[in-house]
Length: 159
Image (cartoon, rainbow, N blue to C red):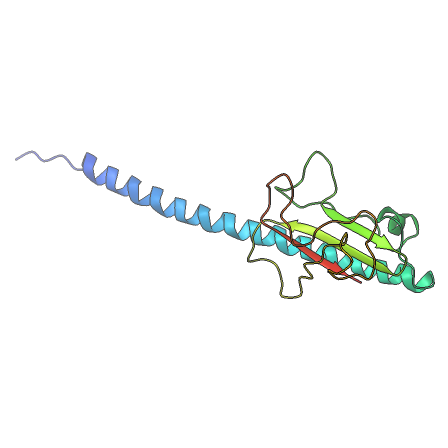
């Protein structure tokens, strides 16, 4: 009786199928984790910008800068954060900012609607009844998804 040692073709195909299924589950979980990590960074960037804005206002009689770039030229923040990932578009900044003297509105697009913290303001800075007594120049809707259709939610904060 001569019997060959080794695996049959069926056994090899079953093992390859199992490995394929496990790897797809791991990759799906990894992509979800990456999305949440990018959204966490965007929220952290908003908090850093808020801190820099408050420091600027403390030194300037309560007035906020006309543009976020004023924070770097005056040394309140080393550089304006950029989008950490998939929502970045052709070098544009991922953070919106509108200001009128002692009021500001700042926002970022998130990739997942479950990433927005409970303190999301959902203001529309162009409408006076939303969160501000007057319409802010450069206004934007903090509750809307971006016009390009990318992203699912806009996280925004105000002064």
